[in-house]
Length: 120
Image 1 (cartoon, rainbow, N blue to C red):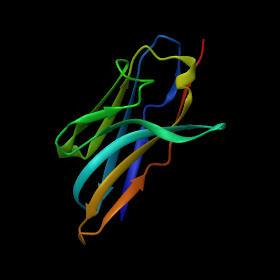
Image 2 (cartoon, helix red, strand yellow):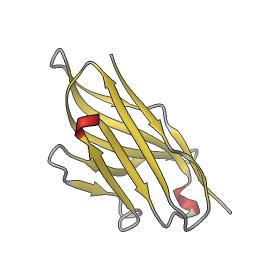
Image 3 (cartoon, helix red, strand yellow):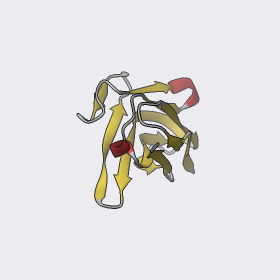
């Protein structure tokens, strides 16, 4: 089976920085897209950033020029570098991966979520 395990969430002051990590493990043959989404109690889960197998990226307008997504394909890991964070960045952040398992089945996988709270 496949698992996505996130780490790095927590409490950060406005204007500060935080790095989220997500490692995929298990019966993985290849990973296409990896990314981060976020959700608050009053909003649906929405895109933060994605990175494709060719390392091209896409960001939500609200985080452009503040957040950077990167990946280490050798480690099946994706990172989200969060800079100049704002209170409105407070949310549960979910890792996402579009991958093929060792049976060649292509599926979407999600992590369990990690809480990020931006507050003074």
